[in-house]
Image (cartoon, rainbow, N blue to C red; front, side, top):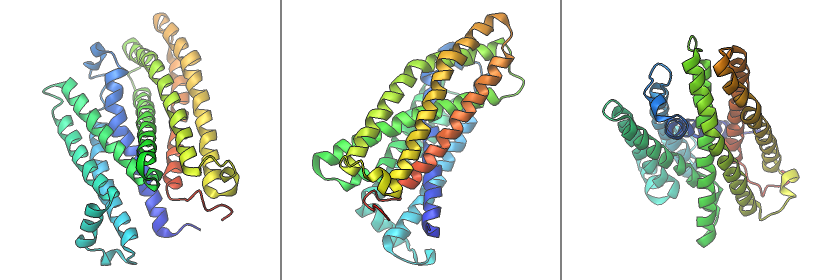
Length: 313
């Protein structure tokens, strides 16, 4: 059985992963996934309110994570025993504590970037994207990379960073497509053209994402388990990793269907004006893929709380 505090920690970690991926992934999608001429069409594309909510939620979740981790590190049995002095010690003396500070600074910068939107949309998007990427990257210091020293610490950390950014790009794109496809009353030719163009624009990025995720996942596995395959079947960590990998494979199949079947089909129907069925199929596929991504993030949050060395336990 998982202890109550651990359950709360897993839930907070899950929401942090999802939230920070949206903070980075949504504005980044606007930059590379939507043509410049389309970005100005506020009636069709408007992610600011979602990004603002994600940034503010990220700040709250970070403070909650600080309390939970400080409580776990201090060994106190009651949150009422947790003092400011203990939290300050964790911040000053641990890498994860420093990562909290960096994350909060990055999130407040992202918030400032959102507020600049009316003055310069392009500057606003870049500030929010870069700040979101920094905030997302800080999650690497809460992972398994900290178990190494020397050059292997930096190599594993770099692999974690690549994995986080690639995952954040994919999750952000899925969220953007879900937001677009769930909107009511916008299924006119202009709307369908935006979705079709965005799907085409995501094609190249999607290939890079899959390669980056696969390579970084392999590097991370070798570092964490020293290449031992027995861990996969002899530990809860390994079994959960197998389940996560299976879900990732399912996401790849859906992504392939979107790219090679549903996307081209939607593009062909734009000129014909008969796109309601294609939009419906695309919506179902994207929402399914997004739902699987959420389950994978829940698995990642749980994996971070397990030890692969605890085989047979």
